[in-house]
Length: 444
Image 1 (cartoon, one colour):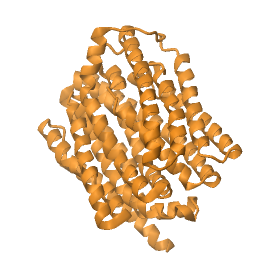
Image 2 (tube, one colour):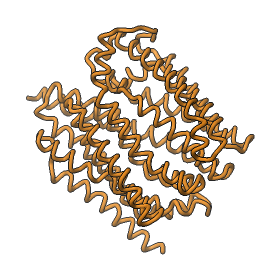
Image 3 (cartoon, helix red, strand yellow):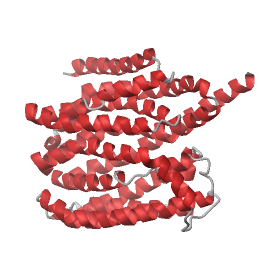
Image 4 (cartoon, one colour):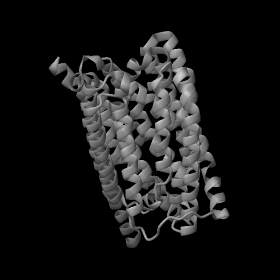
């Protein structure tokens, strides 16, 4: 009994340590991104960010639409440390990168016509090279994630982000063009590629093909593929509608609000995917009877850190925009306040999904994405028709809520759900909003 208690205590300390590292890493990289954005918004025009938002949507879309869960397979599979398995995964990743580059080139011209932006053709054609670079990255990064080596990964990520920051700002100061954003991102990808192959994890990647490894990866990744398709459609539809109906300038403003609203959510996502998922998968295999307790124990600190902050953001978002950006971006203020609600609920749903996937129920990640996709594809056009830009943004904010009607009952059937803890999570958001309302009242 004492050994089990000691093992549980050590596991929780490990989760806490690695979660702190993930959050601090994310904070450092976001600080660099924010600093870069503040400088770039003074060197470039909103249209530049709108154009790069479209480029980002295309690259993200192609990446998601071809996601077969290579990283997740390496983390979850018992053969995840086997070199034949890893080299097959690397070979598959390279093939995917080359195919995605060709697809980007094919899309470049039609996209430039669809958005009536001639610059998109050259930007997308050049951006295709990033997908080849990313495809050639070593699986050493997957191995470190499997080992929950958050500190080593933190050094790499911060280093890459700093290199990107220097490159993009220097280029923008010399050449006041949207191309500065693309050049900086490409140089950052090159740094990450080189670094990944210099890491000593006990092996070096080489081209290889193991049919059994290929079959295991694709079998595991079929639900992840479906989930990725639905995630892309649900997460990018709002931007495509705004870009198509309201123009690049409004899309650029919306992108600022979206970036800030998702900052905390992205930190939570890092902790969930980088720490919670590997640990919960291990507990599910070794001690399934304590999985619910371990899940909520791990999640409590995360809820305590994220949800009150998002509640405060829902009340003070417009103040942040006025403080950091000039008048051209003022409309992002009310957008940020509304979008913080969506991020808060996503922070509640994501760990729930990860816990289900950890017990082998990867289909619920797919189901959640599909539900969210339909909520966006139906709700956003209706919201725009009824309330213009305001209605569209409110519809986006509500898109996470239907997932609760799928994930919570599924968790309850598997004895992984505590209503009191979910209510507490919602109350934490309310406490943050209440305190921020008091601050707002005092300063206005």
